[in-house]
Each structure stands twice: as C-alpha cells, then as structure tokens.
Length: 187
Image 1 (cartoon, one colour):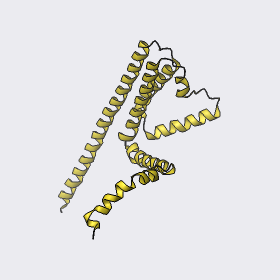
Image 2: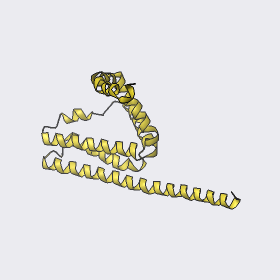
Image 3: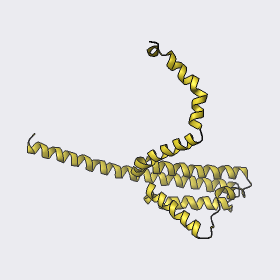
Image 4: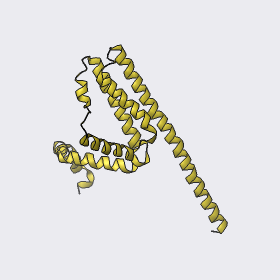
C-alpha cells in the first residue's frame, strides 16, 4: 500500500468519524425534541383531565405538574450521570434539612375522584417511562453503563428473591423433557 493510498484511507476514516459525530448530534437533538414534546403532551393531557374533574387545585396535580415542568427544563442536559448526581444531592439535602418532601403516594390519598387518580397515575407512569427511555435507550452513557447495571441489578434481585430458582423449579419439566427427547441426546 502506497503512502497516497494510506493517506486516502485515513482521510476516509476521518470523514466517516465526522459523519458519525454529526449524525449522532442530529439524532440526539431530534430525540431531545421528541422527549420534551411527549412531556408537554403528558402535562397538557393531565391538565385537561384535571380541569374536567375540577381537581386543578389538588396537591398531587400541582406536584406532578411541577415535576414534569422541571424535567422539561432540565431535559437538554439530562443524562445518566446528571440523574445520579441529582439523586445523590437530593438524599443529602433531605438528610441534612427538615424534609418538606411528601411522597406521591401520600399526596394521592388526598385525591377523591377515581378518574383524577387514574389520570395522575397514568401521567406519572408516562413521565417515568419517557425518562427511562431517554436515559437508557437514547444516550451513550445509558447504553454503555445503564444497561449492564440494570441487567445485573434485576438478576441479583430476582436471584435473591428466588424467582429464578422458583421459575426453574416450576418449569423444569417443560425445559428438560424436550432436551431428553432430542434425537441428538438419544445416542
């Protein structure tokens, strides 16, 4: 391979890397716009339903709406590292100061209308699902760190609760009978 061919190969590699970086930036911006737009839709849908049910002044609604607004505001810088930093800072603040935080389940006890309760739960689940997708599926730190960590955590939790062992016990005949019946195992 001559020096010119080697130079063109390096130039092609640099152009490909530049193209990947540009594509990632464009896709990231589009994913961010999608994430924020879905949060706006969830917030507006919640407000409409709470208005129909005359529960706009409900504390659970105001708290959830404030959480969604905060997520919309912080979305451009939100990734797995930022989320972990926020969670660590919140623990320190709640531990050091008199907590003003009221769990969402406690706030839900004040909601009397079942339709409002359903809408609040649905909006909270939508917000959480959007955040998980944004963090773990569409960000590089989430894909590199989050998925392996998530799999290890779930498997450890399932193993500690004997779910895997229990599942294997319950389904052992379904698993092992076809294995024994396999023609390759007959010999």
